[in-house]
Length: 420
Ligand code: PA5
Image 1 (cartoon, rainbow, N blue to C red):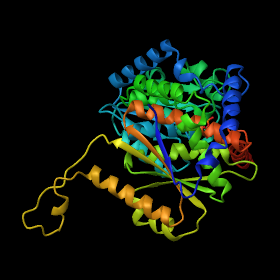
Image 2: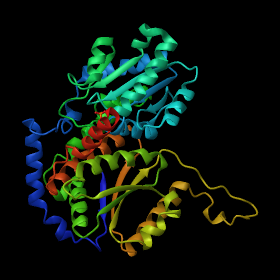
Image 3: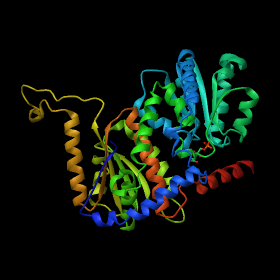
Image 4: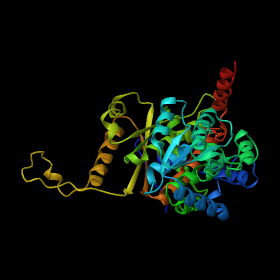
């Protein structure tokens, strides 16, 4: 069980990988004991096996209420309070309430487009902010709350707002207490980008009709599979070490590649996870994402013949959720009859093999990660895999993978500028 990992053996010697076995063993022990003693914000580490069942039931009942009352659900948040739920919605959204996202930028044109999309449909809001003070989120919430109050009156509007924030701190918590919104807590020991499996993302997922039990089950499976200090048996730790080795070889850019367009926002979530965790102290791999085969026809040129300071991590899906066969055409004018009866999935796999070989030959090492399917279970498993790999990568490079002083700096500056 678990993710199948492969790598370009022409670039990385097996011995080099294996030489990290002791280091990984001690990082594993440090990580798990720090979590046990609450020393770092590691609440996410054993969350999938310790989930509060009562809270899960409350989330599901909130989602049922939303479905009954609203055609549109607006999820308002940014960064770690946005990308995880968007990744899940883009990948797994069922036929349910339509989800719109707001508060993830400062564009008036974007917010107006959300208001236009709501139109005269029934809607509810979920405002998500761990700090409870983030400007993008607060501004979008204030505009949409006014719309809600005008539409339904102050009393009913209150019942159509859900707040997800810190238990005690921040203006959103204060507003929530005063107005009596239904609220959920983002645990203090789980940072924004590690909060996908908390209400920060689970409420939006449940409102989108996604099976959150299956997501947590997949994450629980990953917890067990990667709770293994032996590097040779742990694909998650191997991924961390391979990245670290490639960085040491001057490969400072990692390009995460997906062959399924629905994974675009998973890529953006991954980018935040690794970028915000590792980009510190003048070092860190720069995480980028591309969609293949789309970007093979644009960025493929750079990958093949451009600067050799990058490596690729390719996610492939063994059994994609749907497929289409190529039809037979009597006159064969398009010359595609040689592919008759073959599926796009089959051809996508051939493209994967072909591009990987070409890029390896062009000087780009590849790490491959194969997941079995694109369902809730696999999503939960993959999220957990990446979170743990990211934490271990941070420990390997000697930085704290759980803080984000650079992001806080931007937040402080914008408040200062707007206040002067
Ligand atoms: O990972 C992080 O800490 C950040 O990206 C935050 O998630 C983002 O800035 C939003 O913060 P908040 O949830 O406090 O509104």
